[in-house]
Image (cartoon, rainbow, N blue to C red; front, side, top):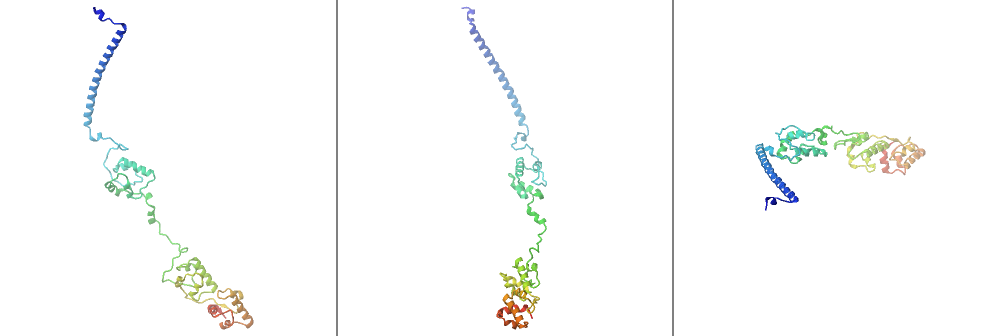
Length: 296
């Protein structure tokens, strides 16, 4: 067998053989470059680890907060948690996420009305709060409205509309007091004050405090506050008064007034109370009531 016969291949076989050789070459070349790249990567990683291990400890920390703010020594100063900004809060020693909570609280309408309200801040320890407490100054606009009571002048009572009531030892004159003074009597308001004045005018004055009980539903406990320093009353002349004038008096009925006019017309002037006793319309009780108001 000749060598030429051994190396003789068909054209299709030669193509396959060449393809295999090229593939094998590329495979070997790829292994070569890959191993060289790994060696370089190992060296770089080794240098990086060496350099990283010599950096400060703080460099290895990863920030998980909302702000990457380097830690600084806390500085104490007066602040209002309702108006202070993030720079001031951070300077006071608060953490970034606490500052964010403060902003969220204020954005929702939250107000720190008292220094102790700041203690509700999430994550704030008792020691931290005690450190900040002397420096928390709530502005006047955020103080509770109740504090205005100290600045507002004391309420001045409207003595005309709401008169001060009499003390237990105080008394007023029943025949001279006006409605304003009468309303100062405990148990008497505007209604009874008007009733007293009207009744007094119709009678011609009171000769006894007990006459007040003739006013319907008059409070009996109020009688003790009245006196009669002058019990003189206006007297009605039974010989000159008309029928209308006589009948308008609270103690004289129309029948009694008519009888008195008829007596004058038929028998002459009425001279004494005894003349009135002759009239059937008068009894002893009615005569005793009206007697202080009659003149002859």
